[in-house]
Length: 217
Ligand code: DX5
Ligand code: ZN
Image (cartoon, rainbow, N blue to C red; front, side, top):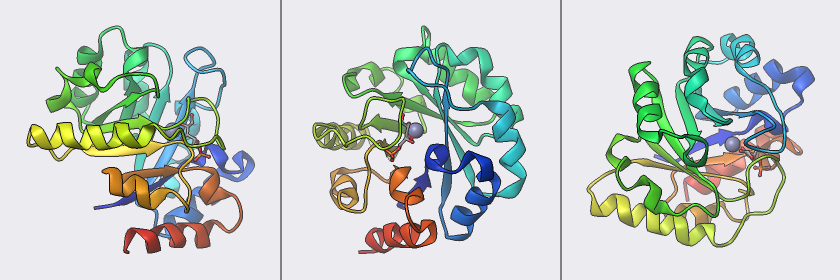
């Protein structure tokens, strides 16, 4: 099933709770929350206390994308603030296998994100343990960047790899996803689509509806 995960990085942080309610009621399946530490990525966003404060306004899946070094140090905090899915970057973990196991021991779903230059092969020995693979289609750190075209081949190869192992793992794509390119991203094999500026710029409700219309075609 195709799922839309609007990234609240492009929301109005002064009205974060209201913006989340609006995209929830418009029918978004997930809410994508980007946590940045100013070290792994060159930007700082928000962390567990902010997620905790907006958790009561929506029952949707909280899809937390950790762009932080050694996320294993903070997993309990993300459990406590109400994360459903926690995605860590392969590049940010000294012990990726241990980090995935720790997320699952806490009862959350485990995602692994790959930066544009990171090869799929880093997932070879953990593929069976992962609930979602996040293919970054921009270099992480900022909203509103342009989709990197080579990401399409990476998505295709990820789906082929999963199929060859008999796995139906979710493939999430994040960065530069728009109403104009989402169809080919889905065609390549992605099924969880993150969109920040493409949802929050303009009419949020209409934008969510427009994504869902494409999903149904
Ligand atoms: C980028 C973040 C994304 C970002 C996407 O580092 O991980 O989730 O908000 O924004 P858009 O959709 O505008 O590229
Ligand atoms: Zn993200």
